[in-house]
Length: 398
Image (tube, rainbow, N blue to C red):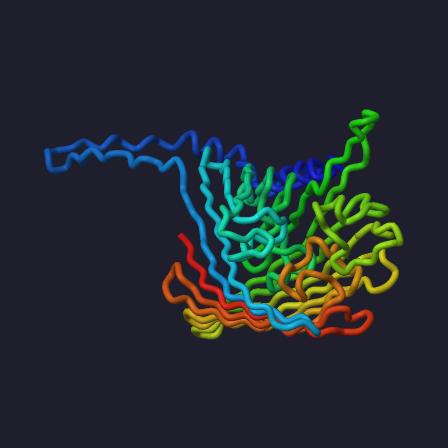
């Protein structure tokens, strides 16, 4: 599986080049026989164009964002907890060549699926310095107009309907190699495939000097897009396979982790692997000043015999500076790997279901306020317990 991605990159490159028609001999000859235009002669000082200075290229472009959050959380039968949290990200990108770009970004926190820092955190009180970690460090190589190849610690080169986070929290940046290939087929249709081979844990027995099976997430998606006038339809399927998780504890996957809702055996290990199938569709329509979309996605873990399905569907509407989102979601106990699922929905565990409502307003181009409500249930495979959560966010980008 370690070399499967390179084969996919090579096949995509060859296919894309095959779509570019070569010039025929007659076209080449005609081009070579075209007479060169006569040089223009300035007849007066006024007709001589002034010499322009070549603008300097900026070596780096800086970017970032900051979020201040008021969070209220109630997990039955406990009382409501009210906290305030911040998240900050700061990065830079450099265009090294017309087809090669490098991006670096720092983010608060050290968790894979969240950059939140709780103000007055009881685990770290007294206003200490807050942590910043390497969130992104990757190259983006574009050898063809239809192909991007990524390497390093990168944003997810994947599609999830309605930007749902059932399988991967959107704060997770993947480590390894990835690609995105998008081939137009006509004015209305295009085909895409994307995915990669991403490291979860490298395993080596230093005591005995033996190589062991590494843990990877191997992902691939295939789909198509249809666009006509104000309509866009995107649909596809995907496969997400984690290697060699069986008989390993969650703490081997991410430091300090528990099952986050997944089934564990009597030794605290995963009893199965996770080989997840995905299908998704998203339909978008523009109505004057409104942008409306509906989406649906389903997941199934083939390695688990029961409680192995998840789905999400909803609506998204945008009107001028306003945006509204509604999502209905259910994630069964072993449908996805709990340590990487959405850290907000149901408190970041599986065996959850419920709704999410969100309304956002852009005060300016770079300042936004957002109100989000989670009405969820936990432990839906046994005795369901209410889980409610509210976010009031102030977001600023620069």
